[in-house]
Length: 312
Ligand code: R5P
Image (cartoon, rainbow, N blue to C red):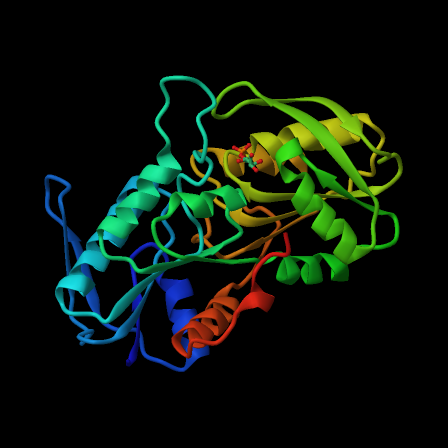
């Protein structure tokens, strides 16, 4: 099967960088919207019998990006593609992998089921919110990790007085990986979510006094979690040169404005989603292009990718 890489409209820069790293030209496709908001896509590349890799993060915004992915996958299938793999550097709805209250929908499972319906045969994802999200998909998920790339970037910026901080209980396993990789101690903040944008830090376990914190998380969305963590760390006597490392810097709405006054020294994130607009933040982006290209190359050749996936 020929390898064809298609760049969805969710993140053309990353898709093109991945294609360059693979040494291929991205296949042509058109994505248009009618005035009433309906989507129309057309895959112009020759995909009949091909091994197609469709690069498209599903957010932000989550719904249009998901629909574009589904339509492109369907178009590939209807054009006779041999196999369609969705390369989803950031997966929207991943945080809805369980219901926290009766009456809620299970967004992650629904979005994942739709990819199967659209003809996606396999998904490549990066640092999913939890490993449980994999189980929402009706097709195999190749779950890559950007943590080694981010930890390398953090290592270059840290000294022996660092402390890895998990900003909530959900990020403890992730923080353990960073702490192990960096050879640093760890602290955990006890966070309560008040609503979609507000969180409160209820306590801190571990010693951060006079240490330089490295807050690690899978994603920064509204910035509420990081904001609460920064205040809790400063209250506990940590040094003010704070570094944040997160795979996905989603930063919708007013997130950039919210983070800017916190005077965070550095934010190290990947380019899993396009860079946000707004006042300048000290964000350094580590590109996922070579990781994605490596995964695509090996999957196309049916080679193992075990060393690219997170250790559990
Ligand atoms: C939560 O469980 C996640 O790991 C992140 O901490 C959270 O999604 C970040 O969201 P926000 O920036 O809106 O607080």
